[in-house]
Image (cartoon, rainbow, N blue to C red):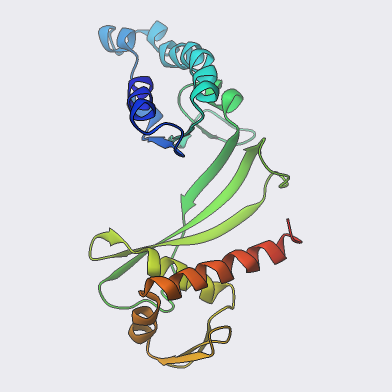
Length: 219
């Protein structure tokens, strides 16, 4: 269970920052649900009831051992819904109530701009559904890319592409210019080689954080 994993880590490493990711809630059937017949109507609410009692105990555990837990869930569609949003998340409303932050993510069509060989891009669009941790208006949307190269997520490409999106790296034809670095690169690959040096990547990360801070008005 998550509790045993967290306790084991805390005993060894003390108060290090800890994030636990559980993928996914819909893949966690209740024991009673497994024992009942799938046509039994009483089994439909068992998962929601299990989540409700679980999170009542789990929330104090989060606070006591000071860690963050991220749960993923699925979006499903209710075919009988004629008015309002037909999409819902399985497991009842316990997660909606106990969560501090909720994001609704979906993949969208990639325009393919700047894509190179042996690289896959997953473009997502997110929408803020609930927040208790930041003064951000509900309904705020954002778009981002996850860059996958040779079957693995590439953090360098991810940061570089985000910098291009923010205008921190300017592309003119096959040339890329980073004004803050006073550097120019001919070709995408040469630019990546430059930022694969740890010191250069740290400078780019600092530049991105400064840009985001300025966008939020210094907060």
